[in-house]
Image 1: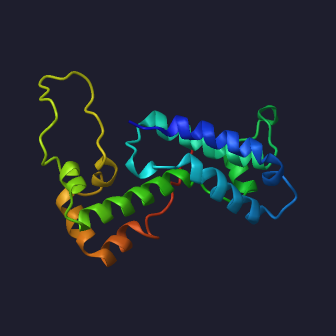
Image 2: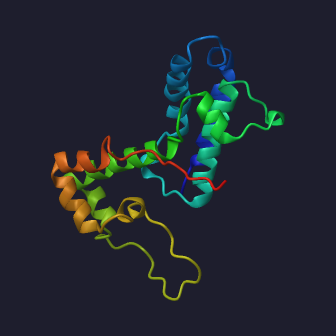
Image 3: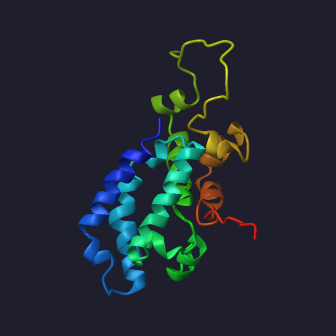
Length: 182
């Protein structure tokens, strides 16, 4: 279950409490660092354990744009496109990348250890009801975000080699860049 809407609401409230600081005449880079430090840390609390649905991803991206728009004092009646806002703040969409990076770091940490949580993630512990003939789309699980690129056995092998894991999910695990049709 994703708790993104709950934490987004708390982060927006904190942004509004410190609005004078984030919308002041301070340097743009400093204000961006303040937003990421004070607001995003609240919004992304526990994000490494979330299973993100498409709805949650849209909410997180809209929250990110909400922060940049409030920081630049852009109201919705100005009809400024998201790409223009990102150019003004000299930023790319980064919040989903941050969640994937945190999740990769956490999963790598768990897979390197031999603990109960690893067994739960690998589904070695019985405790789930057997559901046959369930209708609809398969539910997303914790590792689905990382497994989309490769299988689980490759993830586990790479997690055991910390340098390979960091090379794969570290700085090279870049932010999402969306191509918009014009």
